[in-house]
Length: 137
Image 1: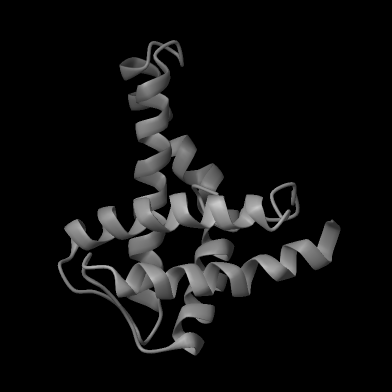
Image 2: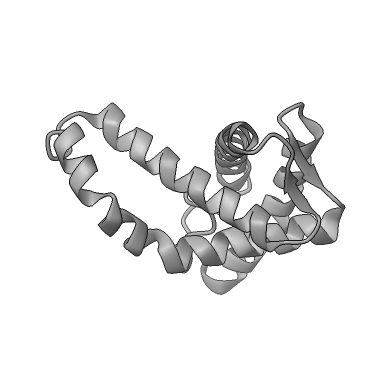
């Protein structure tokens, strides 16, 4: 799939963001341009910040999950990173707003991750290793 699949993920994820904004979760988008900018920003933040965030959260993760033995705890830390990236992108992009703050970030990030993972797999874009287009995806 390579670079083309990687580039195709962004408009797909922008559409997913528009779907999430249509849900009553407190996520607001000004339009497709804001959604596309947000999807790109979430992807780039995920690429740039995933290792530093995992490093910062390594000790609490190791203690609470017994070094990864308790899978649900590891899963929760992945969701926490997704929420951080989603909220950070909302603070950086004009036209992308989390109306209810943390509640909107949590609900929006979860919906975005799940829906985008489904869309990306259905469209055959799942095996793209170039960029982490979303923390949950």
